[in-house]
Length: 371
Image (tube, rainbow, N blue to C red; front, side, top):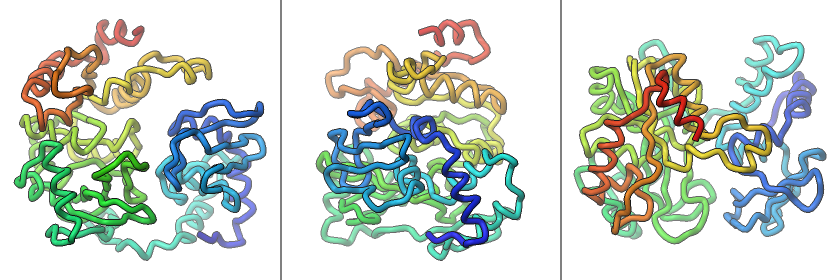
């Protein structure tokens, strides 16, 4: 997307000032490359190769995938956007706050106005501006590939009532990626504000393809679901859409955060919905700090969950649901909340872990943080 010449120099300064290694490490694991300033990432977001063929020179700020040659003629913002899953607009606005002296509001407004938003319609809903998006795919599953999508959904433990309740869709292609995909629309007060697609077959990457603004939202937040959350003032936060569906199957209100990250807009959405307390239940691997991050100076031992819990406690009463050390389940290797849809034994275990959630202000949480 083209930026106007009046602030092109400031934009260049924004990108020159960012430590791209530190910034990218929030979203992907970086492994050493062949040279001191080189880093590698496992999966190329363009061709899907997962053999660490993407090399990034963090000093020269250049990169290339040695399979599809992505990066050969791209700009730095393309790298940041693709690996973070965020829009270039959001990244520019975030990084602009680091410019010294801080940019004026006019500069931020110029960034906003320079981006083409024709794919969305802006509506005024309860005095707040919402970006209404066009949902991809087929809502009535009438396409030739829809049977494959439905077969996948049912194999994951959903039933026809779930398909209708969550208003699932089928799509053969999302952006440049060929599926087919099952599409989970994000509906807020009946309005489509985002979506996530899950590839239904094979091991091809990426498994998930989402609308640019997915990090701003939670799922499911249509009226039928938010009414109960607003009544109870409590919700469980999980990573993925199937995890959330599993918790709702148990009658426990839950929102998925679309991964191991909480954005400020997601926090604000929780506050807008009247949430006062929450239980954080991401997958067990989110409670382990990788060796690479520890060598890089990470202080906490409990990974993304610890970081998110300490951050969320500023606004909510927070508990952590520990999913580590599960018992053996003959029908699954990964007893996460999504498996509730297929396994009654997993459902019982998850329920017991929710009941044993750890209050972040307790000595038990302090001990848990120490690993």
